Image (cartoon, rainbow, N blue to C red; front, side, top):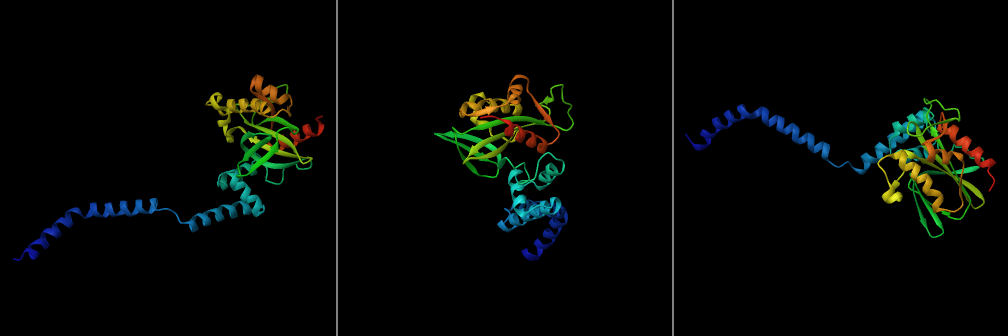
Length: 250
């Protein structure tokens, strides 16, 4: 018998013994290859378009508003829809705008000479005059929390926010600060491992970086007791903060 003819029975016997392992190995190999394969630019665009269409359809908003929400929530359409529908956030462009133009949600800030540079979550840089009039107001949004006799709630239980109003070109601009969505690297060595405590430190730091930032009693209450005026929704806080700005004397 030739060597080739002798090898065939051996090969058949080997395949009969090891075919389950070979099949399993092939499945694992091709599965991992599929999962680890880089997604094409087209797939990324398609996913982004799907998220955009989901927001537009569910919230009946414009494409521009949908793009802003995707930028604010890091592409997470489900979270954006939930925040808007539950009143925890308001649709971009629907904020109280009769007094102040909405400039975006603040991510970080830097002082550069006479400029106060704000970085927003949608990737923009806003340069403001560090000597211009500004007002800082703090609030806690938590529809489940009961307010105390002074109308305040615990900032470490609800979601703490601030509204920063800044005068630019004779008009007011408004920037939203959210305690869990800020870059606290500006605090340096003072930075702690708690978002709300870092928020309190940042709120105290802001007026030291610009001489004309005024603060109302909400800021002092946050510093003293880690409490602030309590609101059921972000829209309610925005309206109240805007009213404070109306009544403020600079």
